Image 1 (cartoon, rainbow, N blue to C red):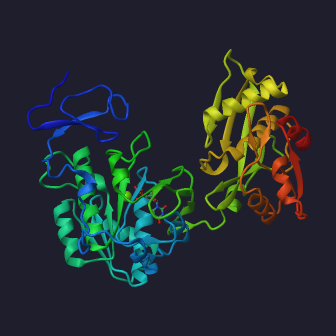
Image 2: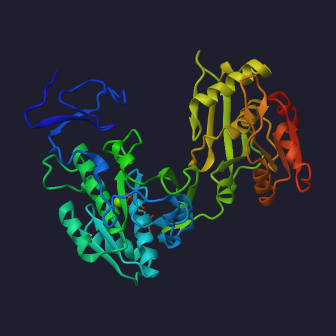
Image 3: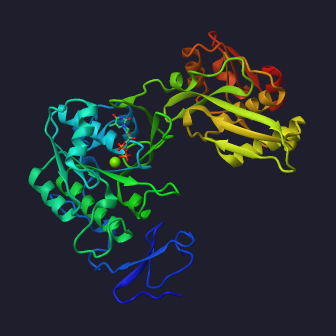
Length: 458
Ligand code: TYD
Ligand code: MG
């Protein structure tokens, strides 16, 4: 077993757990083969975020009624979609981590935010460790003219970066990306666990101390987490993920942690020639271009935060040529698909185990709301029977293991969205019908179990 050389220590790449010797499995997060060797960080530095002090505030406790919530602490970013995910705008003195695959559009999004903020009189400093000033200028030219006070700096030494921030005193700072930044007093390479952790720590102190909002860009590893330890996510106030299919132009912004708002909300963007454009009506985008008269396609409604979103569930069921049926799931949970297929087999008598089944959410969306269950089941049945579902019909409901269709939350909102989008019929859990008695604009078909739903749809 490897032992640390003098002056080095082992870190878990996943959670930041520190150990004097190498270990196969991390005792903290139970991940395998995640330990890396790095030079020791002096005691004073390795304390984490707890040591951050907010100057200007005494150590005396404050009565709750004396704490004021100043409304002006929030600033709109000029992107309604981003503001919603952040919880109505950016908060002064907060640290926001924006993660995502390379090339997904993180730098473009933040540059556009900088442009918007500088136009409403905010002073913005964009620090890039990845691109030259020329490259940034070229990108800026694509997104339109910038007139406000927007400063750029190409630098990777974080101590110099901090100096620049203290000199310029901007309102908002962008660090693109945290993996390129390093601190001189830490000898490990940029992007290593201790560098990323200590750099974030310094940025945290800067944000809180000077009351500056700092956005940090973080690259994502194969496993889909921001490279560097999880502790990074614990240290920052908000963690946003920018996701989407690189071949598709749609991008989804999702909050996975937010100290200032809900984490259910999503923002939808489209990458265009002139940067990112907001998609104000995702339902329209997701169900446009859907095939007519094709079996296996069903429109469902998922509730993302406060917003109902219509989307198309597609299924393809074909006779299996091998002993074992193949299943794939795109955009929905694979295990959930297996459960739904088992329910169809056992409760409704469809011999699904002899068929391959492929399920996909059109538009590259990832959804895991149980309310999609019934739509997935109906798409599977539709493809199995090779009979199309009425294109004017919306289907939602959670399916339980005995094939029962269970009530979902906010059925009224989902139905209203269907009406808005011109749907004429809706299959939904019977338990949800009660509250929708007065609904005259759309035909509502309440069902109690999957068998009833199949009868109602076909
Ligand atoms: P970028 O913001 O550089 O991604 P990240 O910072 O997440 O690595 O986005 C790069 C991609 O976006 C690149 O493939 C080019 C494309 N793009 C457009 O399609 N339109 C534009 O206006 C811009 C600026 C980029
Ligand atoms: Mg970038």
